[in-house]
Image (cartoon, rainbow over all chains, first blue to last red; front, side, top):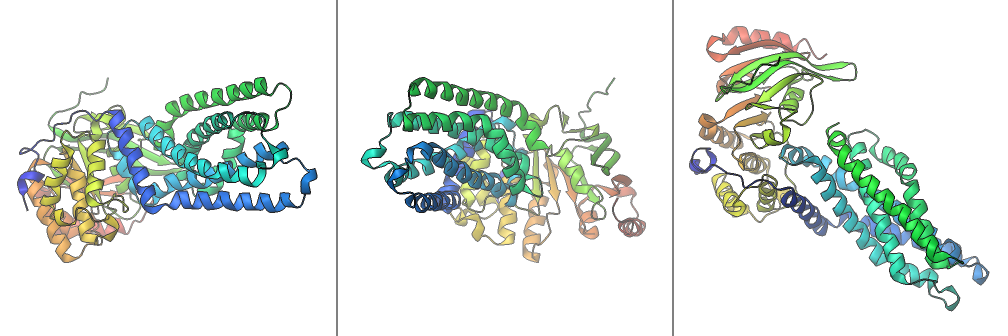
Amino acid sequence: MSDKILTRAEAPASKSGSSSWRQFKAILRKDIVMEMRTKEMLTSMGLYTLLTLVVYYVALSQTGNAFDVRLIAGGLLWLAFLFTSMLGLNRSLVHEKDQGCLDALLLSPVDRPVIFFAKATGNLVFLLIVEVLTLPLFWLMFLSGSNKQIAGPWWMIALALLVGSIGIAGMGTLLATMSVNTTGKDFILAVLFVPVMFPLLLGVVSATSAVIIGDQGWVSTYWQMIGIAAGYDAIMLLAAFGLYEFVIGA
Amino acid sequence: MPEAPRSDLALEVRELSRTFGARKALDKVNLELPKGAFLSIFGPNGAGKTTLVKVLTTLTNPSKGEARVAGYHVVEDAVPLREHIGLISHNPLLYPDLTAEENLLFFADMYGLPDPAVRVRELLEAVELDHRRLDPVRAFSRGMLQRLSIARALLHKPEVLFLDEPYSGLDPHAMDILDSLIAQIRAEHTFVMISHDLAKGLELCSHALILAKGKVVFFEEKESIDDEAFGKLYRSTVGMGVS
């Protein structure tokens, strides 16, 4: 065993400065590599979403053609994604905590908001993957008939999904961090999640519904609601930036 | 007016307290440890040993008082301090789904090391795990995990190494390897070790500390310690239980 490597004098590890960007990339890459290897989060989130869609399909198939599913499609879509995201968010930090690795991460010279942004970005990536896989299925099951065409272009739904997912991943990561050190972590996250998310849900569900249904003035309604959701995202990101040091150290 | 930090001290702890609700995990702890010393911390379960190490490694904030490690304040200078400390715990603090090399490269990025691949390869060779560098950590034995954990802790060449029951769960061969690694790096590091093994703790230390109910009941240099009297004090302290 070489003793030169272990001692401090022989080869001082002069630091090039642990830049926040490098740390952000390292945490994000690590989370993605681990998820691609285990597929625990994506599998559970994907299966849960599929199960939810099947339940919707069975329930709505009883209503026949008289019921216009477009009226509730926005709500159905976001309900599925909301509960799916809770499943993933809970796992993202609990996994780190259970493996005892959170302490190792916290021991490194990283500003806590960097951990937040990396974790939130990872959660956003996983949520978007599930959404991209689910959306075509949702369209096929509920919106593919000739009398069920959506009013607006798909990119507007995609934008609403992106804005909503940023808020869910960001605030969800903050709440998951708050709950990770508590005994009833699943319960705490579930109790806090929906009330805190209400303004965001109001914005993105309304925006998505506006595009699908296409009532009079839907374009202005859409942008108004996207504005509310985007404002929520901005406030949430600022709050998380300021609070994360306290939250993760509590 | 607060006193200026002393450059000859690795640890300066003044009136340090940490409470969890009504429970005092640490109660006005004071101690000074010179650079290059080896401090063994003894005490019963719940005495505050792990809380003290958590405060000194910036993993939790003190409720009152202050502490400096390697001259850095544990709250005000927490981020730069973390570049100067390492922790080896009974828990390896490694990601089981990553390989040995990926684990060390990840932490090398976190510490901003200039040539991470070179440093990681050197350390894997030093702890004799280079032949297993591409294996996932979950396939490692306890001894191998502990060796990799040592490599992780030494990656950034810390000045002060914290050891939280590092011998816990190791077989005799793995204990020998850990002894050898500690002996190699002993001269250039300050050590703070939590131990329930009185003989091992006394063998390694230059200073010994007994904590009970969050308070320091004994803190002396090893040269002035009578092993028999210390053993009696330790056993009576363990009998005191927790706060």
